[in-house]
Image (cartoon, rainbow, N blue to C red):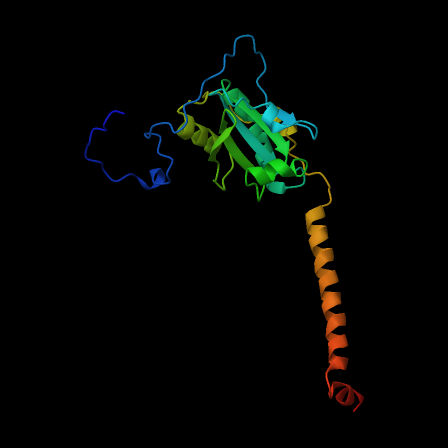
Length: 213
């Protein structure tokens, strides 16, 4: 490796002290795909029968941005139009999205404890995670550029079509089975503990007489 040239560094402005300085070298060297013949750049949403690993080539250096979302999460819905516009901003990259509730094994494998969760893959290896709370087209552009060095097209903005799909920006009604199971488990545990407490009280000498008095 070449030894870096030491130069005096002035304090960075406040807006550049967030660890995403554009002057830094790219962390991920992505192999940009050939876009010849591709007329429409859009993201692909995996259905329940599709496996993410089928779309990631472990022997390749191409990069893919993968979104884990759920259709009833309001944060996923607000992110949707911005993520829908990304394939036009970065036509040489690939973009995938999958419902985390339908791909629980993948969510566990890649540490998805909350949605939306955005991971940058190189081949089949996760390289970086988007951790900003401000999920907009501009922050997503900055994240991709800081990680890969690939510049976004400047003429891309969120359009009305991006609000319509392919990723849904309208919440869908659904049952949070995990929350429901947790509530039922907690209620059953409280009932069990109450019954056991009453049973033990009658077995302790003196407790029955106190109860009668």
